[in-house]
Image 1 (cartoon, rainbow, N blue to C red):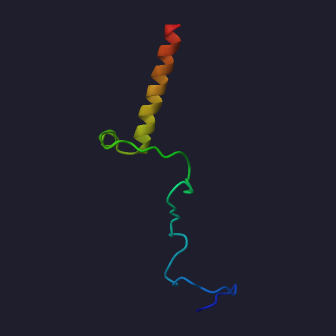
Image 2 (cartoon, rainbow, N blue to C red):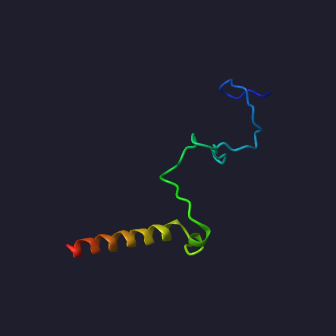
Image 3 (cartoon, helix red, strand yellow):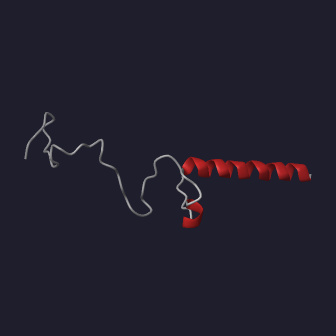
Length: 73
């Protein structure tokens, strides 16, 4: 095995790029990167092209729900 400048053994091939390797864990110990993951049912997911569209629809629903509660008082 080759040793690099730090003197550590190199266990990966030189063509592997650490920046491109993803972290993937399964189960409850999985790390999330930037928020909560929500699983949409297939029939709902096909109505939205991306997560921003889902968020926009949910914000709209929150806004009209709040407006209806205020106007009922």
